[in-house]
Image (cartoon, rainbow, N blue to C red; front, side, top):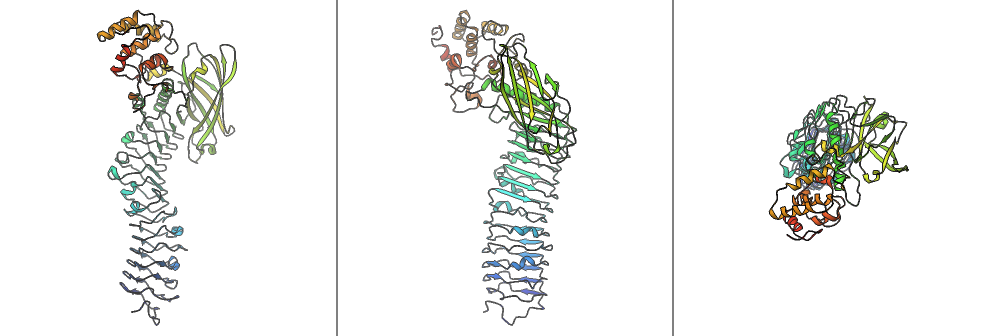
Length: 633
């Protein structure tokens, strides 16, 4: 029994060497002249330990090593076989490393590495320029794929995703002939498919339980359609990039997803953008030259707030020259009013910064909604009496050089100089913003762009303000110029217009924010309803006592709300287990706290759709206790 081929073996004229199931441990020592060899078949040679030097077998086309379970080493000469078309290493379970491929192998079409013990692939795998089928079935030790993997691959094996353990990520880059990917590829957290110009479609996801992908990046392909079940099955998807694809529409059910980031930049065939989910934070639609319509989510935004809602967003529509900005402007107005109102209603003692809303689109004119406008980067405004604003909305007409547009963020700084009613002058507030664009590196087709942002702060700083001067400047003033600027003071009336605050109890001639002393028309209208309010006998009796008392009108109104079970509670905000006051964040949630001690509770909350109800036990216990001169009933 030979462990190797006999020494007198003369292979010069051999065309096919078939040694299936042999007991050989190795073929030969040194270099043998196999100039005529076309096929080398060693299937099932379980004792074979190594493949020797094949540098003199330059015409070999097919090598079968399937089932060589003892094979531990391949000669580096395999990487120089330019005529090789097929290499089967299936079930070579002890083979942990493949030799580097020193030269381009244009004819190798099929490489079967199934059931190998390999840990990674050689970095020089990019030299497999003709590869069409790469099999990596059950490569359970395979940790990573090089970024230069096989540009000629047309189809990936269905088991690829199942056995790649590369930190829960699948990365497919510059596979220039790739046309199909398996549907189970969504079971990794991160999926990136970049620069595959022949990929025409995404596979339909399988059932929900097997899809774990949170980040899906698909860029530089000719994919034109998104599977209708993508968002219903990929329930963990948070970030989606479809830039530089041929996408023509996005499924309507995207609004039911949990998506936070959406990048559809340079999708030249996309004409409309459907209603997006309430969780959305960033949208980059720059370079969508066919985009005409963007749906807003105004109706959804007016619902009581939940943890799923992100009021602060950054939307970029640079170079969307066909875009009608009406819906975009309406959504900006709504979000600006929502942010200001929520900050006024629910601000906590830590004074955490409220979210911001930023939007950018092509244009030369500041929308009329911005009531103060001026050419240049500075503007002065005089505040009307009883302005009662809750924050600011800023608008800029920006003219930027192309290399500035390529930045992810454009830093913008501002100062607000305040003159008070007492004649004082002071620099009170500093404004710092990073206008987020994340734009392409191509020249802009539009000269100017409209950029809008919000600035919400504690308005107590402005109670004595009579006049304000705003000065703005971009970080690179020579390359990013502010041509015009506009300002809008965000008022309670804005919130009423969008239905954020109910006008049911509001008299338009009244001062609804600060006038909590005298009997204004606003308070009188509520007290009139208090007279005729129908309650139980005990509550009606208490109601009469309240009306006839000498209490301040402010406290009478709070008692009236208490009797209507209309005080805010954490349970209505879906904050399970939280017993703190939902308005000020300090003190325990109780009617007594809201009645006497809460500094944030006032008429603004009572007019809001976010005014939530207490339970009857809380109200009855409050109504039946001796309090502020009232005796138990």
